[in-house]
Image (cartoon, rainbow, N blue to C red; front, side, top):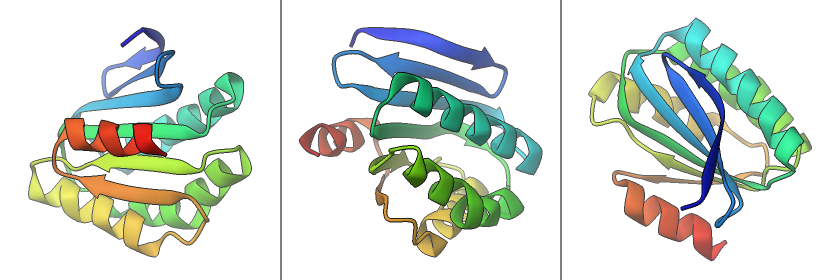
Length: 132
């Protein structure tokens, strides 16, 4: 993968993958509502900057409960992401149950038009996104 890091903070690294033409979100550490929302707004900005339609969202290295941010994501963030051009969102769950519940809440409530698929492992998530 030919990637360029666009953004790097303690809880999130965002890269653009030139081979697959998507944003790769590598979340890490303990997340809360504020860190999730701030990171999501940065994703929106970079998606517009790179003019891509796909996101690979990797939660395999996170912990924490962020249910309010999940609700905000489904109601506010995903519609904005769709308006910015995102059409496919591949989401890899955290192995930690509270983070899984937050992610499930965001996905189940979203009606933005983005096709969202969830996975337990990164490789199938990437393969699915490549096929879109």
